[in-house]
Length: 347
Image 1 (cartoon, rainbow, N blue to C red):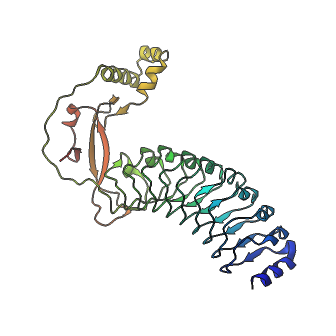
Image 2 (cartoon, one colour):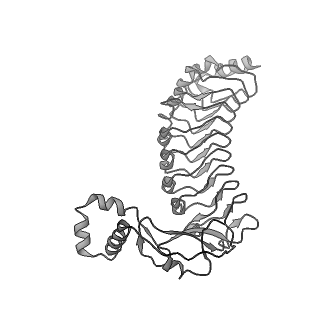
Image 3 (cartoon, helix red, strand yellow):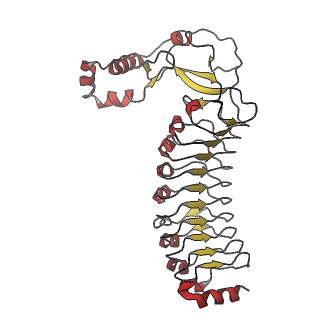
């Protein structure tokens, strides 16, 4: 049957646009593919192919390639020749690495499906996939996301469910077109503040992680769907705390003075600071107090503000209040907090 299908395709020559050989127990790429330069769609899923052969490099007009459910162990360098490719399905293989130049020619790729593989890392070169809109890497073994992935300016949907991610890079804020982000069943403890800059994000699923609070401003996202069940979210359960006094280092006192003078546009401080790059570097790490709005450097109180989720969000069952992580500059401000702000303490 496989041979008959190939013979029929070969008779078509350059006019053959589609070859479908699903579930034919094929153990290697058909060597005759190099005689089909006009091929647009090649579907070889559900076979036993362990390696992509050099003959694929002639398929420069190929738009869709499906090699799902085979035995591939890497994304090969030959992929770079598929300059017209828009959809690449590699799910259900044993892929654990990218060849060094695999992403180089895939400038038109809009969809990449790597679900159910054995990837532990994604190379920075993924940033070369400039046209990518849909990226799915569910059920792998990723421990981190490369910063380069966050510069795929056209990315609209990112699926990273069932991996081993510990954190999300702050650079995710650059994915301005991202509408759907799925992070189910990872080991994430903290969401970056940059997540709040994703103005087009509409669906966020972080179920089954270890998140306790959300970054300040999270409630301003224009989400339509938000799911967070299975996380250890802080609950609004007040306990008594021992009042303490503020004791700041000389660096903290000096930094606060400089930052607050700069915020008030003190001309003398603004002039002098230009001559001290080390000081500029230190104060660049400063934050603003959620109560008084004044700047501080490294000494703060970590607090939680409980706010109701926006009414137009479709949310997880039983989510009545969203715990937002906020920072307060002193005990004086802590004592002026509102009724929904609580300090974080070990109990």
